[in-house]
Image 1 (cartoon, rainbow, N blue to C red):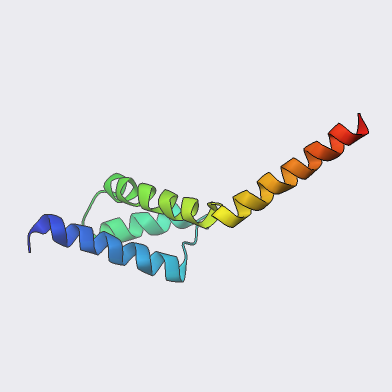
Image 2: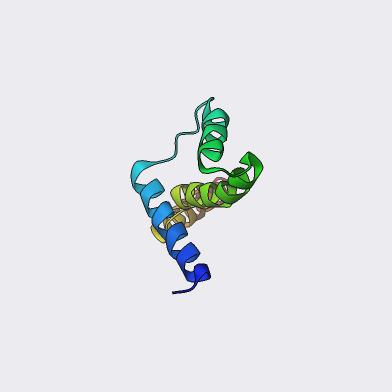
Length: 88
């Protein structure tokens, strides 16, 4: 297995762990990341650059609308529109 594939697998495992345990974006998050970067021997800006797209992806997954939610909203919008039309 090459290093690229190992990196892909590591990211998939990390995302799965973060999905299960969640991401705590407390006020001391930046300090915790700085401590982690120091502990593993990489610059903090590299660690933040690595984590930012992962965290954004997980946030987007969390707040993404399911097809059913979208269909319900569209149905509701249609009902509201029909009521407006009936009133006029």
